Image (tube, rainbow, N blue to C red; front, side, top):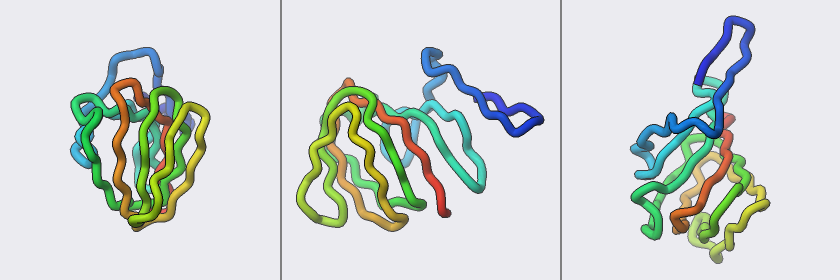
Amino acid sequence: MTSRDDGVFVARAGEENWEYDAETGGLVHLVRFDDRIQAGLWRPGEAAGKQIEVELMADETFLVLAGSGTLRIDGREELELRPGDMISLDKGAKTVWVVDEDFKEFWVYSGF
C-alpha cells in the first residue's frame, strides 16, 4: 500500500504484500487504512474451513471475488457466499464465517 501526498492510495492486487489479520486469522492486502475508511482484500489463509467469529467494529461492505462459503449474521439463517455477491453489514453485527481456501473478498470498513 502506498499513499501519495494528493490523497490517492494505491495497491497492486497481484503483488504478494499480504499481512496476517489478527481479527480473523486470515490475510489482508490493504489499499487504505486510516481513521475514516479501511479497505482492502481478504483471504482466509490458514483459517480456511474453520469457523471465524467477528463482531464488526465498523460498518462493513464487501464483494466476494472468488471461492465460496457461508456467513451467519446475529444468529440468523446462513447466507451462501459466491463470487459476485455484495453484502453490507452494520457496525456491531456478530458474524460467523466459514470459507474455503479459494475465498477472496474486497472489503470496506466505514462509520467507525
